[in-house]
Amino acid sequence: MHVNSKVVSWLAAAALLLGASSASAQGVLAQTQSNGAWGGLYGRDAAHTVDIYVSRTVDASGNPSTFLFFEVEVPVPGSQSGWMNVMFGSGIIPDADMTSDGLGQLLLDTDTASNGSFHTFACTNPLDPSTWGAVANPGRVQMAALRTAGTPILRTSGEWTFQWGDTLITQVGNGQFGSAAGTGSVGSIALPAGATGGIGMNQSVDVVVQQGQ
Image (cartoon, rainbow, N blue to C red; front, side):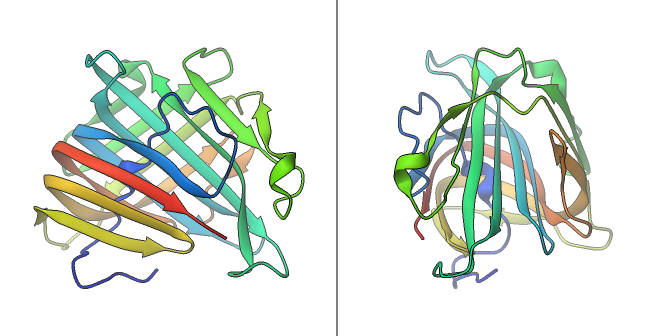
C-alpha cells in the first residue's frame, strides 16, 4: 500500500455505493458521508484480495444508518497491477449487525442474502467490462477488527488521500482512528490471514473512492 504525504492509515471508510446504477469496476466506485464509528480490514493471499468496510452513516433520506462495502479481487495476468476487481457490494444493513466501542474493537455479522437494501455486482471476465452485472448477494458477511496494541490514535482533518493497490480514496472532514487487525469473510471467501486495517470515528466526513485498471 502506498500512502502519500497527507495520509496516515487505511481510510476506506469511504467505500459507499448508495444508489449505484453502474456495474463498472472502474472510475468512481463510491461517494458518501461517513459519520460515527467505522472499521475496515484488507488482506491478500495467492488467490484473493479482500476488503471489508462498515460505517455508521446516513441513508439517502439523511437518516442515521449503517453502511457496508466489500470488494474481492483476483490475480489477472496482463492487467496493469496483476490484480483486478471481480466482485463488489454495498448497501444499508441493520444497525444491530455492527457493534463498536469506537476506537478499540468493532464487530460485524450480517446476512446480505435477503437484504433488499444491499446490492452486489460481479463479472465473468475482469478484462471485459461488458461482463459486469448484478448478481445475488453473497450471504453472510463478517468481520472482527481489533485495534493493534501500542499503536497511537491519530486525528485527521481537511483533505486526506491514499492509494491502495488500484484504488484511490479521498476523504474530507475530521476524524480519528487507529491501526487494526482481525478476521472476516464475504460469503464463502475468507479474509486472508494477516489482514490489517483500521477502526475509528468520523465526523461528517465526505468520501470518494475511485478505481482504475
